[in-house]
Image 1 (spheres, protein in one colour):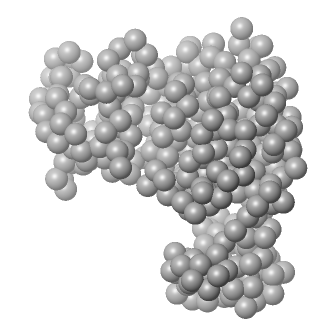
Image 2 (tube, protein in one colour; image 1 turned 135 degrees about the vertical axis):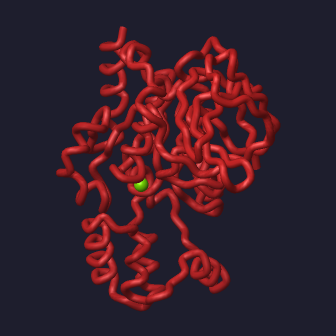
Length: 321
Ligand SMILES: [Mg+2]
């Protein structure tokens, strides 16, 4: 599957070179003693300079170095590069004057605890482990509050627990993870529908299995795109996940509002790519992280219900005019 290459995506050539750069605007960094500025052939514009040559959405494709064009005298080199997981782009990759006059045109939603109430999911995991649901939930909250990966909860009850393996076992036993219409938060359908009626592009993209993506598609939600981390081969908080969001929305990052319940997995990494963000206060992370000062500092807006979004976005856009 093609991987997205965007501003400041790090690449690996062989095993020794890891590079960061924006192919179009020239923002670049250096690792391993080598600096390259590469002009990509592709179909998407640089968010910072949309009128300049586009960057490429293919991984492992031939590239040509253009050091003179971009005023970089250090190295001229061409080759085949493979995209690897990358860190956040640097602040210079953003153009604040552009952001300050950019309205929200697309809204992309996280899935768990943003659209889907995961009470059933984790309740059935507790059942699968053979532990009381209340105990599992308490341990889950403690793990989150300590800033640890929620998957460590499983290790508390069963050391060595392999989530991927256990998912397969559950499916084989006819107890696969599942959610349905009744697991959607009550504000989901009406809010997404209203946002689309307002002319906004609506997407759904979360850390989910392909199986969950299939379930989401059967729900016939009012959305222009439904995608999962499994579909893209990269998961939040990896910046590459949000680059996929940018590509699918067909907007610049500042024109996209990403809505999620987690500061660590949704809001911080989306903001680092330049997306606008809405932090919703619900679900375990939403409650436990609600007093983190970054909630106010990093998120573009904070909400208690998706039903607030049409009005909040309209007000935001009105202020940009
Ligand atoms: Mg979530």
